[in-house]
Length: 511
Image (cartoon, rainbow, N blue to C red; front, top):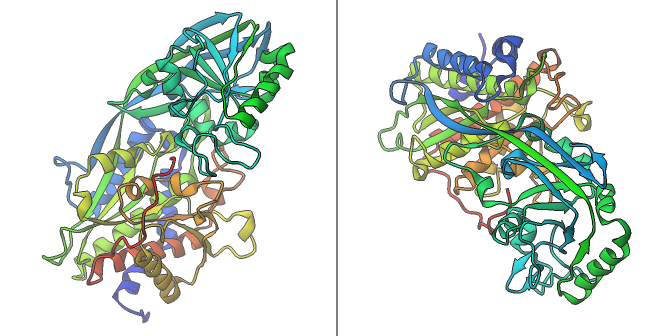
């Protein structure tokens, strides 16, 4: 007979590589058509997940169903191009622009562009002072003016303002001043096109009540090559103006005699998706009102023509893992060992469109946020990255100590006792340039002050490609990670005292 360390170990061992493969082979199959939010494939995946919860005997807690329904706005480009002095520049090569941040603007033709420094309109410094920009196109730098010692002219310190941290402030200021289009100079267009490809190719969603672009001037991020074409013979004047701004901390603009044509035609549609909820009610009358939320996004990029983005790792792997965790807890409860606190296992949609499913839940929770103990989030756990190719039994852990050191310790202790994975905290560093802490569904809980932990295997060459398929998944690794997710959740749900937020919160950071 098999010997288990304890009850938790017995139920964790019901999570198997075979069952994970069974789930993933369905979730990431061609029949699911890439599970794009609001599309038929996503609805099929939602039904599969709901059927699994029903088979476990979990109650339908949202008006007799397993679905928390969400309305989305879907913005995408019908036509987008830019011409400078008669030369065509290409979208996603020379420039990029987000449909969700822009209004439908079929055509702008002008023979004048205004270089307007940094596009800041602040009591401490304003590029708009004394400049008529009504109906104009402006060209600006990102960030804010810094002197030679990297001291901000706005703050007088090394600390920068929200004009640097949130680009939307510049678009709002431009809108108020009557600007038609803001052109941001971007030094690394290729990098950001690759990072934001999913939003640029497939459009971007917002929650149904939101139309953020109505508050913004239109915008695009342009390459330095394209910027030079716009500036033309006044390049030296622009460089001189920029240096003056940086040295003096005073605005300086340059009027550019440039023929430019901008087309930004959008389509706007209403679509619907759903979060799928599986609920295991707690067994302790004094603790069952408290809830541990376990999440994974089940949506992916969908189809582009005949190409299907199956998303086996992103995030079929996390979805399959969470389904197995739900089953393990359901079996524990049936055997009389149910968790003391309640557990909500939630498969969310809209992650690929901007973390929208989890954002919707955080704003319209089924269970009060003040009763939500923690969020355990699983997003990409089926592959091995280059760093760990010789030692695949690892997982990146992100966020566990950002709000609660207790959450960090619980995960560490569970790993030492049960799974012995290498826990890599590289991406948890506050100065991590990838900013993964802000890029998965746990962040919408963390932003509300709820401790959150995010399990992640890192990226690979198949990330957001049609080649992210089931045959490349390491199911034995997935098994260990899913068991660690279970053990950490088990401890959060069963410990005598609820974990505390004991890490001082810093000022809200840019998402």
